[in-house]
Length: 337
Image 1 (cartoon, rainbow, N blue to C red):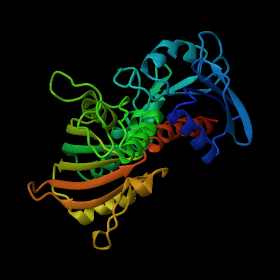
Image 2: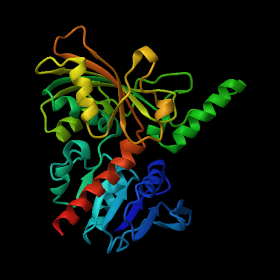
Image 3: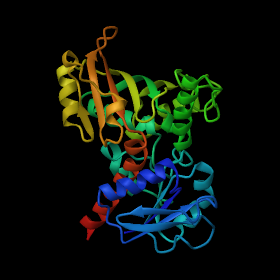
Image 4: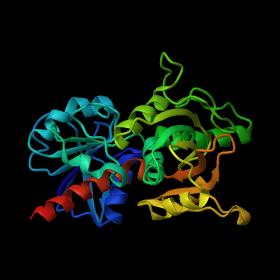
């Protein structure tokens, strides 16, 4: 496969390189694209060095099969025509196309087949918080339809990019040294703090991040589920955590829920409270699955269930999910052959 990565120098772009290598993705040619600032940088991939090319309009994407884009929504919109007009499939990590009716929004464990219907040859990668939640929700949906979801997210600094991770580390050093604290990537100091805002507020009082979880979940799961989210930035470096409450059409026991999670693709159950075993971002950064624990019945609702989940949002929440989409397309092509 002839593959390109747009935004190769960013946190997700670098994760693409690692994931493609880890999974031995069948690449015959790999091109890297970036801004004028990134152009000329070299990155190693499977023992060879590849130089970043400056992203420009033209025919640089001719003869490519798959292009992973992670350079922001405005770049994705500007270059979509250049990328797809020669036949390449664009798998986009931005929010630019997610809610477009003619662009599938795909999490392979949930709705892989949607990727086959792509009129514009664009497939959207969902928001990181949505991805890990719907992977877990699908396990419960397979047992009983989910009517409502309440979710509180605890989102690591890396959700705002590599520079945000660096700023958090810098803030900790400055606080401990008694120096003025650098605040650039976040609205407030994140070190030793929580910020109950991710993205801008909308007219209904929810942030755009919270509304993404509502809208994207319904589209991916082809469901009328009602989702209410509270998204919080926390001072951890990598991997997002979510506290999730669901209301199903019929009561589901803890045993039934645990069995459903254990059978689910992409889910690992880590749920042994007596031994203090439950998912934590400190230990799960860099891992592929969505980890689920603290499974219990909701004391306030007979049809309610609550659980905790953790997943690396740069990996499963971005690069890995996109690569899994590409793998599904390749497998489908091989099956046809």
